Length: 362
Image (cartoon, rainbow, N blue to C red; front, side):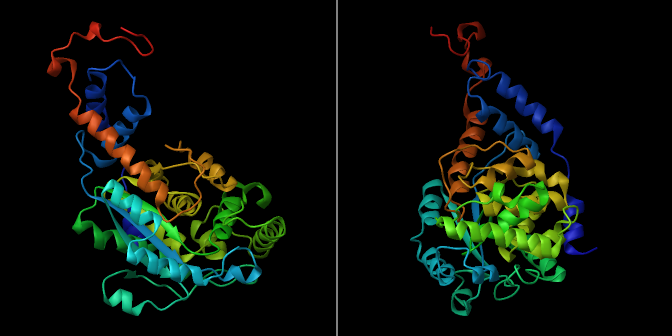
């Protein structure tokens, strides 16, 4: 089997026994039943993902995967492509938003070059970023397919390899983020194909484009879908027709983490596009995905509905990089600590009837 096929074959259903044990403890915590709402169901999900009723999320990792896009030639972004390169240097300096939030939650950030239009030989040699480059940017999918099918497989397998290489350093939970000027366009195209909705309904303003640029962006997506006819039943066909190398890498990382029973926290529009590709390649992988937040991008809301995921946060975010994932990892870790560290009625020697039900003051 190929690496992709072997990884998909390793993804198993969530562990029912671990979830049952976790639920038993949650039901007996010295708090009113369900008074912490989704924090409790989140902890149970993490138990099912990890196969451990008392999971530990000590080692927190965020992958920021970068790639450039030929479709920027069509004038769909408010920023020039060189910003991708400049932001990667900012990540390395530790001065980007993802660096700040990762430090805040105690996460390690790893930056991957999946397909930028820049040469980062020096940074790779210095161990500052990881080279998984498939090509120097995708093709302009308004005129030809974004990549070949072989390149799509290479991008996904690069994401799997990223997990395999980084996991031995410690990885209890993985946040997935992105960097790449123009990447809201392929992401919107991907959900348009999978959902069957008109491009205008799933396309947003990205970096803050004006009305004329937005109209151009919608037209470009419509033209690309009509040109390539990507098959929604074939995730690799969709990725190769209108995707991005970093989106493929994110999909692969999600699959690789799921195969290792590691919770996967997807960031916004672009990371969730990768999650969509992963879920269409391996439907079981969807159970390992945790949606960090609901972006202001219209397409992201449709993606979450398509995946059946309920986001943890709704803060009008649209930055990417893994920023929403970092914030959500903080909540996920809190949920697990509540399950493990809060005493049960028996441990606390508290009479259960003395705890008021939710909304009732003692």
